[in-house]
Length: 91
Image (tube, rainbow, N blue to C red):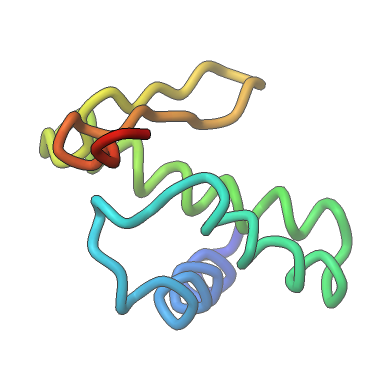
């Protein structure tokens, strides 16, 4: 993938999610961004956008320890569990 494509994709994610903290990122929030993207782009492009974002989350977790419980299995997508402080009380 050309560097400018990756840069464009990451800028797009920044516009969508830049106002959120890492602890606010949830699969439903990411899906809210992905769904309109799927209306504008091909399935292959959507996968490339998600792959770029997943890579950022992987680095944030594995190298910087910013996301607790983040896992990324090849071909299975990304998932993580919220920290205990993020789980609503009584729910």
